[in-house]
Amino acid sequence: MRHLKRGRKLNRKASHRKALLRNLAASLIIHKRIKTTDAKAKELRRFVEPLITFAKQGTLHARRQVLRAIPGAYGQMIAEKLFNEIAPQYTDRPGGYTRIIKLGPRTNDRAPVSLVELVDIGSVPAESAEGSATADKKAKK
Image (cartoon, rainbow, N blue to C red; front, side):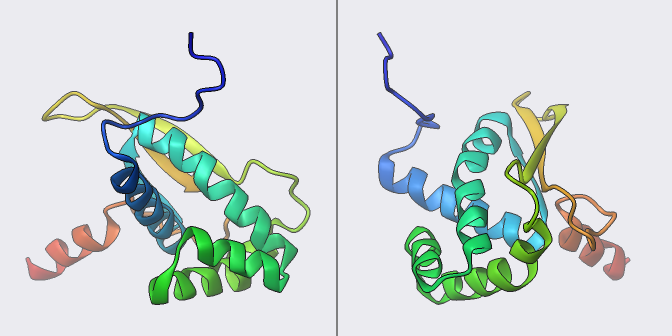
């Protein structure tokens, strides 16, 4: 029986899964939307939404909790962006900061793919999650 067994293993060891979620969370906070598989998207939501709730509190303890989840110098940049740009936009929202939009199966391996985005963020670019890579390709042509 699966009583009290939360979360998905995502076919990875614990350390790899932890690193994956940290990187996905950082990408979501920076780019406001990312494209990933359905299972990763659902786990990412469980990882990111508490971070945004901490950022809404704005205390030193909340900042340290966020830095504990995403450590290092990169985590400092993510925490700044989270506390200064994202959290103020969600002050009156009680939860549900992310949206998962299912895009269908991926072409090469038929894995179900989703778009994860932050809800009600003002300046989200119109291009999709691979935005900068697409812009670089267009610039080269």
